[in-house]
Image 1 (tube, rainbow, N blue to C red):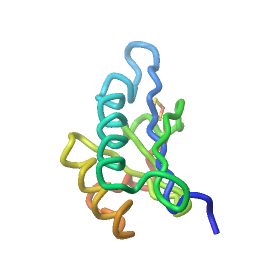
Image 2 (cartoon, rainbow, N blue to C red):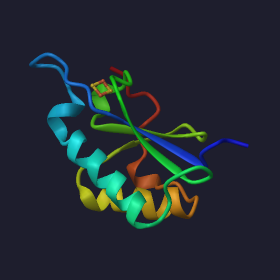
Image 3 (cartoon, rainbow, N blue to C red):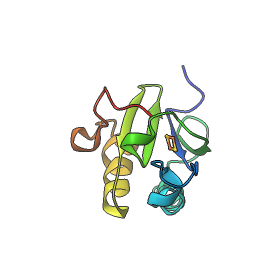
Image 4 (tube, rainbow, N blue to C red):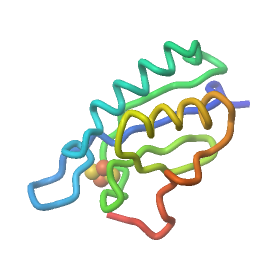
Length: 108
Ligand code: FES
């Protein structure tokens, strides 16, 4: 059994100008919003949900990206509503959000 039920990592990396970069696509704000939502829903802590910062996750072309473990479900998102849906559906109720999943062939 995992220490956390779900562990979500947000790439907050900034790549050089001209390259796709999660940091320039709202990643910090999405990370902070996710943390706040998880806390507000009472999901944080052992046996619950952990929201962490990450460096480059090497899938920049699909950014901004986040990944949920232990499932290894990769997401891309646009706004706060997308983050709310990931929290409510996946992190709270265990139902991954198909429409926000990163296509499997997206790399750096
Ligand atoms: S900069 Fe976010 S995955 Fe590389």
